Every structure is written in C-alpha cells, then in structure tokens.
Image (cartoon, rainbow, N blue to C red):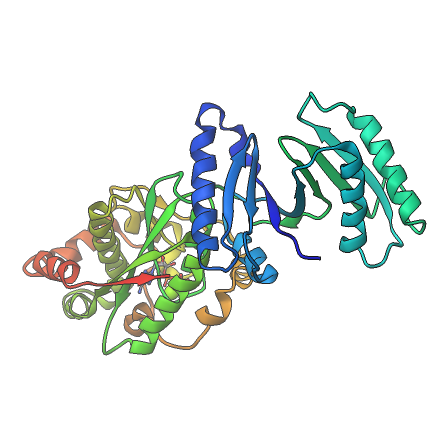
Length: 393
Ligand code: ATP
Ligand code: MG
C-alpha cells in the first residue's frame, strides 16, 4: 500500500499552554527541513493538535520514515489515508479499501476507534465504530472483532477531513530543536560526547561543537572522525557548526611548564575556557561535555570540581550518572558507536601522565597555571582566531 500522507504525533509539546504554537511551529520547521532533502514534495500542515505531512509526488517510504524518526518532538508517525469526501457511505467504502490494501493477510482481530472532532458530523462515534466494524466483518469474513486486545486498532478521526490509520511507528520523542536555545558541545572522537550532545539536543537545544585538535600528535584521520561524528549527530539535530581549534602549542606549553601529573586537568581547564569563549561569541547559553563520575582520573568528583571552576556558563553533563554500558547502548542506538570506536588517537590520550592526579588541589593547580602567565592569554587568543569552522550536515 502506498500512503500519500502521515499523521505526526507529538506529546510533550501538547502541554505548553499559550506557547504551544511556538513548539508546533518549531516542529513543522524541523520536519520541513528534514523532508526537503527527500522526493515527494511534502506539504506540512497543522490542524488543532495534529501535524500532517502530505506527499504531492512519489517518494521513498523507508527514507521518509527514517528521516522523521530523526526529528525530536515526534512520538509517533502514522501512515494514513485522508479523505475529503466525508459522505458516510464513502467513508465505509474507503475503510474497506484501506483494510484491503494495508493488510494482505486478513486473519486478524480488530477494533475501530472513532474520534469525532467535527461535532456537526451526522453520525456519533459509537455508531460509526459499529457500522465500520460491520463493514469490515462483512467484506473480510476472516477478520474478528476483539475490543480488549486487538491485533489491529483502526483509528478514524472525523475532522475537517477524515483520517484513517492503524499503524504508529515510534519517533524519537523529546522536544523540537530550536525551542530551548543553543549550547556548545565539547566534541571529541570518543563514545561519550556525541551521546551527550544528542541527549541535550533531544530537549530542543540547538547544538554547536568545538573539537581540540593537536597536529601532528593527532592525525587528520582523528579530525575526520570527529567531523563524521558531528555529521551523524546532525542527522538528529540539523546542521552543526564545528569549531576545530588547534591545541598543539597550548598543550606543549603546559607540558613544558607544569607538573606532568597535573597535565590532564590543566589541559581540560584550558579546553573549557576556550570553548566558553567561542560559546559566548555564538550566543550559546551552556557548555556540554560527555563526562561521567569516576570514568577516568579527570572525572572524579574533585577533578570535575576543579575543571568546572573555570566556567562561568552552566556546564551540562547529561551522562554524569550513567554507567559506560548505558552510554554505549545509546551510541549504538543513535549510530555513533562504530565511528567512535575507530582507533585514531585523540589529543588527551597522547599527553596523559602515567599517574594523573585524581584529587587535584585547586590552589596547587592555580599555582601551576601561574607558570603559564607569560604566554597563555596570547596563545588562547591565537587558537580561537585561527580555528577552522566546518559545517556538518
Ligand atoms: P569521550 O568519549 O567523549 O571522548 P572520554 O571518556 O574519553 O569522553 P575525556 O577524554 O576525559 O573522556 O573527556 C571528557 C569530555 O571532555 C569529553 O566527553 C568531551 O566532552 C571533552 N573532550 C575531551 N577531549 C576533547 C577534545 N579533544 N575536543 C573537544 N572536547 C573534548
Ligand atoms: Mg575522549
């Protein structure tokens, strides 16, 4: 069966009161952007708590479902038949046709649920349920009614037009991108940060990203891996502006001047400082990292506190209490796992000390950082100014 249109269900955004239209408009915009790249010439419309996508030409069904399954805010996608001729006899005919085309094997139990939003419609819902049930039973004698646990629930919605559908394909949930401001993701080539970015984006936050690159210690391939990850996350978030900061000189300077067991933590403090500068320029309201308590030395509670100390903006750490396996499970689900586990080094792994501090002392760290006073401000400025920007789609 070829469906011409889809009913798009959203949940949370339904409860936003007066601002509801803002959320609906954001969702319509996201759907439009995502379907623009597919054939079908989709027309997206809103009607009281409903969003419809209607194709005006042929399209690839699987591709379109896949695209919609990447749009935050959607909880369900219902391929539907929408009929304009609301005449009762015509409705019966259309329902019979729908069942005939949608289900090759008619050996199923079913139930009809009608919602009559158009109160002027001459027949009440209960009667419609019974009549349509009758039509299906008569035309397809293999079918049976089961009102408690049916295989097929046929929904009939009487509105401006009539919607007929019986299948709901799950969407990703969350809130539409563009409804919650923007945040800067510190994106590395690892498993965690792409998942962290995806999670925050799922709440409607627009994502920009910063990657710290340390050539020649980190390879072009490591950089490409981060670009690829940003592209994978962008399938959900829409285009991501990726700032690639050359961190080599700063890293070497820290390496020369500071105790090696403090290297990671000091490096991380400079990453946060630089990311926050770029974030301010881009009107971001927060930073996002993939940190999780206790995962590595730089993510113990004391280390997190010392890293956090340099930030003025809120730092969102959506994975903070997640076990690694839970993070891996999400990365598999969102399709970043395979790319994240390619072997190329990232810039932290190259300079790590054998025994990094796990309980850094903020006073001592600040003291060590004083040794960088002469050149570090200038180096940070250069790193920010010379950054490369890649638009990841
Ligand atoms: P990930 O899997 O995200 O790389 P990780 O477990 O390797 O995380 P760390 O290397 O300690 O942990 O990094 C913690 C967080 O710091 C990362 O999740 C990421 O947000 C940020 N980060 C680390 N390295 C970089 C980098 N080279 N560029 C940008 N952000 C980075
Ligand atoms: Mg990492």
